[in-house]
Length: 425
RNA sequence: GCGGGUGUAGCUCAUCUGGUUAGAGCGCCGGGUUGUGGUUCCGGAGGUAGUGGGUUCGAUCCCCAUCACUCGCCCCA
Image (cartoon, rainbow, N blue to C red; front, side, top):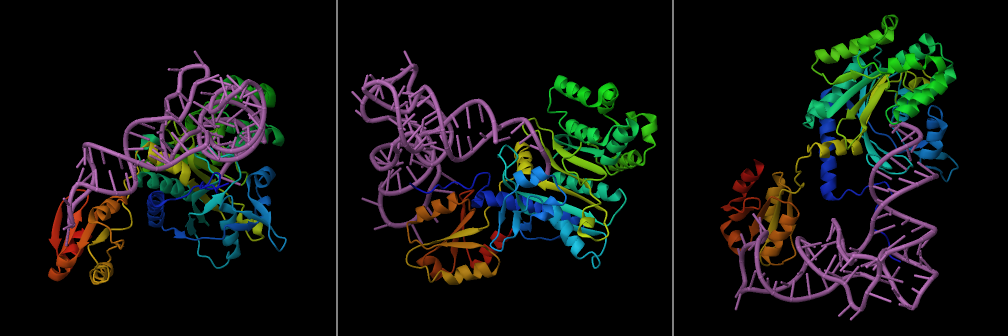
C-alpha cells in the first residue's frame, strides 16, 4: 500500500504556480486595505472552545469545527472564523488602543463540512474591522473598501452587486409592525434567508404556515426592490433612515451597484444593525463573495464595555472563482528573474558574477548540473523564467555574458552592469 | 449529516451491447556528432483500469462495499 499524494480533503496544496496566484491576490488585498489606513494583525490558529460557544449557534460549533482535547485537557478549536479572535484581542487591550482602530488580517480558517464549489475546509479570509465608530460612516467605509478591492483587480461593476439590509429594520418590521412572536421572527428570518433557494410555491406554503394571515403583506414587503417603496410609516424608523443615508452616500461616492435587499439576513446572530454582502453576479458563481455588518455586542462579551464594531470578511476561494470567471488573473511571473547556464566546469568561477547580480537585487538560480546547454535552457523555460545568462570559458575571459530573452528568443552579449540594467526595467 | 455524477498512463480522454498482448493526443525520457530551448523528425519508458469483494467460462464494462474527486442539499464563518 502506497501513501497518497493528495492533500487532505477540502484543503489545497499550493505548488509554486498556485502560490504565486495567492501571493498576487493577497498583495492586492493588503495594498487596498492599507491604503485605507488599516493595520495588519495575526493570532494563533487554535482557540479555546468556549470562545465560540459563547456567541455562535451550538450546531455550528459542534458539527462544523475541528475540535480536540489537548494534552492538558483543554478543549481546543481550530479557528473557523476570525471575528471572535479579533474581538478577544481588542477586548484584551481595550483601555490602551487608539480609536477608531482599523485592523485587518488574512488568516486561514477551518470548518468541518463537505467541500463544494466555492467552499472548502480550509480557506483564507480577509478580515477587515473598524472598532469605535458608532455612525454609518463605518459601514460606508467597509463597502467602499470592498468595492475598491474588486476594482483594483480590474472588475467592472456589472460583474458584482452590493446588497444591503438592516437587522434592526427587519426586527422592527416583524416584531413591531406585524407584532409577530419572537420565536416566529427567528424562524421567519431563517426562511427569508432561504427564499431564493426554495421553489416559489414551497416558500409560499412555509410562509403561510408560519405567519398565517400576515403572509400576503409580508410577501408584498419582500418584493420591494427599492427602499423608497417601503410603507410610509416604516420610513420614519431610524434604521430605515440610516440605510437610506448609506445608499445615498454610496451613490455620491460613485458606487452605483449597491441595492437594498430586505431578504438579506446573513447567518450569524451577532450582527446588530446594517448588514451587507457582495454577490458575484455570474451564473456559475451564484454566491456571496463577501459579507459583513455591524456587531456592536461582541467585544462586550469579554466583560468590558462594548465597542461599536463594523467589519467584513472575504474568502479566497470565492474570490478566486470570481477572478477566474472574469479573466482577471494576470500571468504571474515566478520569483526568479534569471537562470544562469554554467557551461563547462565553471560553477565556482561563475559565483563572482552571480553574487554581483544578487547584490543588485536580481533573483538568480544557477544550474549546477553540468548538463548540456539545451537542457539547461529548456529547464529554465519550463520554470517560466524569462531570462537565461550563459557563463563559460570565453565569457569569463572577456567579462561579457550572453543574456537571452526566452520569450523573444533574442540574445545580447553584455557586461554584468549592462545585464543588471537590462533586467531592472 | 443527506442525495446525484465520476474514478482507465503524469494530464485530457478512447476501449462500440462483458470476449484473446487496454489505445490516442499532450507531457516525460533518449537521439538527430561535440556551447543556445520553444518548430520538426526518429526512438523509448510508463497502466495489477481507485481499492476490496461478488456474479460469470471470462469483468475496465454488471452487482455490493469502501475510498477519493465533483455537483447539489443542510448550514454558512
